[in-house]
Length: 245
Image (tube, rainbow, N blue to C red; front, top):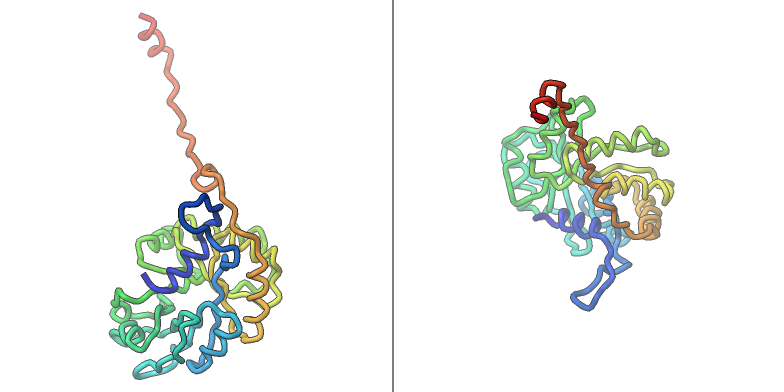
């Protein structure tokens, strides 16, 4: 399991009340993962100080061996890669990256064969429902659903629920700095777990908004797994007469 997957697991864990058997989840733990996007591997430490949980370094235009990110234990570091060269994900792992983000429309399959590194897939906009469902079988830490530049609409929320319902994968979205706590909570309810921004100043602001969110509520089982209604075939007149006989 990648460190990013572990952060996602901790962020999505429900807060429980301790009954004396083990420790309850700390109320100070974040319920969403804040990721900062940068093109400078040396900026990792500064973004960590500002409150980022993860930093994604854009290496999609670089060639040769990936540069090592600034060493820090405070954040998880990933790389956005072009995935054009064979063994590119393995090279990123060796350089110190925990996960890679890739575009499936341009990435070469031979570049993504290392199983010890985490993967985040950028969701293409033109995938059919059948194609989206196949993503459930891939070993992905998350799916990048792209930017949400405007206020979250019900239609967009339904689209996000649809993606999660077909893939069962946590999602990452890129947001503006002035997003409200209510919008973040609505996104969290659609299983958007990772919030990404490319602005260092936005990291400070989003960190405060995320930390102010209320704990995740425990949903009823009926909300998570709707029970399908299976109609029963009605008996014909002839079948009723045979039962009476």
